Image (cartoon, rainbow over all chains, first blue to last red; front, side):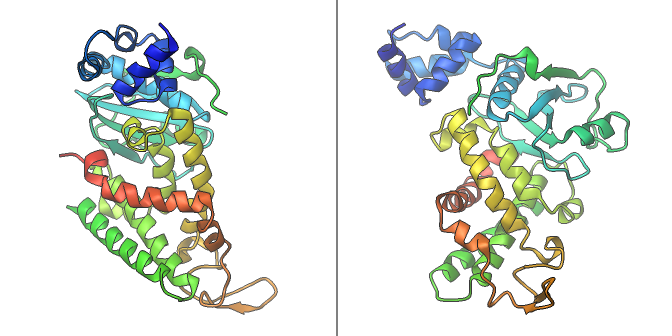
Amino acid sequence: MQTTTLKRAAEALGISFEDLVFYRKLGNKAFIEIDLKLPTSQAADHARVNQNHDIEKAVKFLAQDNFEVEDGLERIVWLRKGAGDTIRLIEVNHNGFPTGRVEAFYFAPSEEVPFETYLADVTLKEWQKILIGEIPLPEGWSLEGSREFLRSEFEVESVG
Amino acid sequence: MWAEAFLEQARSDWQMCQLIRDQKLPGCHELHHLQMTCEKLGKAFLIAGRMISPQQAKTSHVAFKRFLQVASRNPTLRNLLEMSASQFRAHIQQLLPVAEGIERLAPALSQDGPNVEYPWESPDQQIHTPRRYAFPVLRDLRRPPGMNLLKIVDLVQKEFYRLFTKV
């Protein structure tokens, strides 16, 4: 697809051209299959509705995005047990600020990630303490059945 | 709710901070209100997700700095600022040292050094007052990273309900 067409698509979606190229490179179907023959507003809706509609896709989108944004992230742990339709993530960050506990921030559902999301940033040392139970998880959170995403599993471009 | 209460007080501190900035008053007063704004905002964000009690939040001293770092991974906030992932990351990275400088102005974090509330003694046994002290972070606030930090403070307190709370 030509650059000018992609720029038009990015404008319709309300995202930057660079981000659109990035999402397409990730293999995000909605962004690859965007139908530019539709009027721009419909094309944007089409892409938004189709992306990240299941929780696993949304988590993978967040993982890819977060590895890209924060180069200190070593791993992202998705805690699934008892979470229902809520995304709970612990992100192990070399550049994190130690607080000695798991402090999760809440992000409201959005078009890109249509699930309630809790994101806790911990240092490597804190993560090790979590694993041996020295730092407790928030009530109702469990590592049982959790899934880990490592930076090495993702194609992450350096953002300088 | 506690989150709303912390937010309300943070907004009030922020109003005072802006009011004072326009007056010819010692810089410690502007910084004091900015530090209180950031502290309460950080705690409001933590409590908003209902994963931490207000009592636990009270003992969290780096909540705002940590919030800023985590906020850089919020695609919605990023879109609101019309920035790409790389732009937003760079944007937040430049704010963090200033945010840390602001947080350290609280007496509890100042390690008996410069703070915005009480006199202190420097290693050369001089007694200093916040009123007369030239806080380096005040200079930082007049430069682009500091000005961007103030913009983020303004934005996140305005968009708090839309981005960071459960309906």
